Length: 405
Ligand SMILES: Cc1cc2nc3c(=O)[nH]c(=O)nc-3n(C[C@H](O)[C@H](O)[C@H](O)COP(=O)(O)OP(=O)(O)OC[C@H]3O[C@@H](n4cnc5c(N)ncnc54)[C@H](O)[C@@H]3O)c2cc1C
Image (cartoon, rainbow, N blue to C red; front, side, top):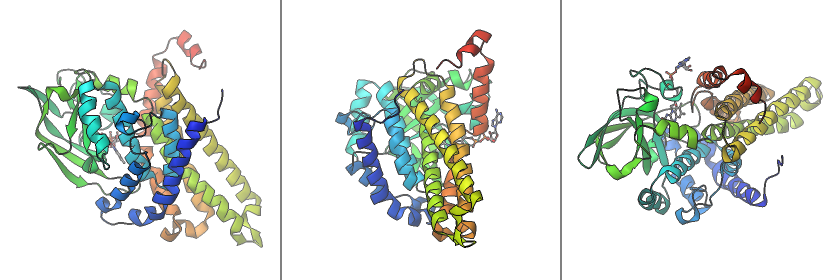
């Protein structure tokens, strides 16, 4: 095992770090404080990411990227999330779904949709699975035909008509291109009857509703999408009909690792700030880091954060290299990272005493941001159930293999 980053990975990390420190960090608190949730989003930050070659980093150079792999993307996302988690999510969503379009799309779809995305300095992507009546049932796919997403895609002359409502969709109202997930066979369970369609946000059948007002991760917008007799041409079906949920599980191996590293970036900043604070805050006649309980607390938090972080990097590495990829390496690191991040951020805030909850100090923003991935990208209960389902399905022999990674 070699845990060192390559020279190229360090170059990407430094590029992301300078974007985070020079561009994102100076404006993050003011944007987060906007009362109107839509106003917490900034096009300037997207354009600056574009200028620095970050907006579409995983795509090949002909589409404005650098062909970065899951691990390099995780390294970059941690840097950006350390400045603001919402901005890291804006990019992570675009990276994930542009990667999916690259992997599943036809040459014609690349030429039209990836070209359009690359040519638009504000080009972001969204993917809409969740509906008001169907959240977890799309993630731990429900076995009956009556659960899971109900948005319909009906065949018409030359294409499909989409009808349905989605909510909570990251980047939706800011997107250039959307992957719309719909039921193409309502007579079978959701896992076997869904397909994805590539839809321009300027399609006349697409309308955006409320921008959700969120506790944290406010620099990313989430909104409703209404698909109303939305016509999609045959050529814009992504991948094969009815198999998309299995394809997503197979190809978006790094999705949970991206979520995990974004939330760890928040905890990293919280703990760094707590260490700095403990070295300068004097109570009981000495800097509080010299009180053994505070020192022990910092040591404990560092160990917890570093172990979760190491695990997530292994998950990102596995997304690039493991064959076959163990699906538990998606769910388990997201579960551990989000719970560790919340815990480390909460306890780091306590090191600030009363000032931890004062808005001008900035720790309360970190705690709000650290709540988001406890449930986003699939709730942690669903992560546990996915892991358990995999374990329960194994024979004794396969159980012994669990430890052979
Ligand atoms: C910030 C944010 C960003 C998001 N971005 C996107 C996006 O870009 N695209 C998208 O499609 N969606 C997105 N979502 C939606 C997200 O995926 C869902 O919120 C999530 O899957 C949970 O679904 P739900 O909110 O409907 O909760 P529910 O499914 O209603 O769950 C409610 C509770 O019941 C529990 N539960 C549910 N089913 C079971 C079960 N079978 N067994 C035991 N317990 C269960 C859950 O763990 C939870 O505690 C986003 C959500 C948030 C908050």
